[in-house]
Length: 143
Image (cartoon, rainbow, N blue to C red; front, top):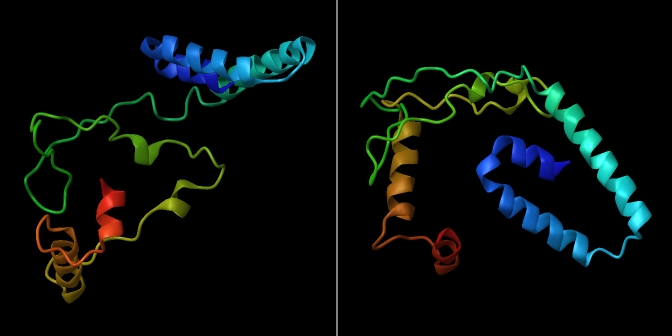
């Protein structure tokens, strides 16, 4: 199912997905008859999932006006001309079945608040390239 779904979203990467599937099958110890059944189930599952997601909202594009005002998203170097690729994603029907509001992050504190200042200072102290207070482990895992 994953193979067919990935190809439907990323057709240019089909050779990569085909190779991964072939390697997975080669490593499998499943009997050919069982593999045939599994392939049929996978294809049917892919068709079912894709038809379920046909009108999930991901197909609609929402214009996003880039603003230099914080805290709005802004493109970063090296490509300042980047446009957001999925501004519609907050409106896409959830895969989980739960309402998407369940997964929403609470709003940021006001930029003039003490909580915001504390968060910015924390980011600057632990996120700076030189003189950071973060542990070596955190630096290594971030890179």
